[in-house]
Image (cartoon, rainbow, N blue to C red):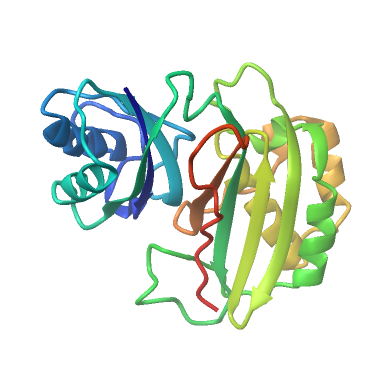
Length: 259
């Protein structure tokens, strides 16, 4: 049978999602936990890979198993074998043609910026700190220029291996609550470092270093070397995977909120 699961994790202690030799990864950690419950080795496939230091509140995975367990047994059994930084939120049995990655219609991220003049202590590693005051209306105006279907070459890492740089950005909102600035983005797919590069550009606009129109110029250039600074990973959260109604999996957005 095929099993889907919702995973939440603090990415601080991991070298990203994807399994790598000799370093701790979320994938290896989750596979080890589910393998104990299944009583045989399992390989999990995720909806979207995250980088070192990036968090997730609503990652979705699937794996195949010959073992029969209840949803409660899969969930509690896996969690008892996971470190405190990772938790299984839900488990569902799904049709064999469900695929955590390829069945997804859209994915969403939230980037959290602590915008005050002193650095964080309790939230260190969970937010990005920007001491310079950010003009949120300017950032919001710049963000709207990214909506729609574009070539996002300027906003992807030089080492990105995606075959096409074209993506459709459905949502790109900037909001503030007290000292926290939130960037919420949703697209049919994301390129390597795309959200962090968008955040870096919008922060430059918010600080007044660049005009709002700079965002449109960057899109037209299609040149990563002209795209500004890549924002740190600490404030980035994978918050939702959207599937069609034919798939019986939870899809409620889970964006972190600190304000």
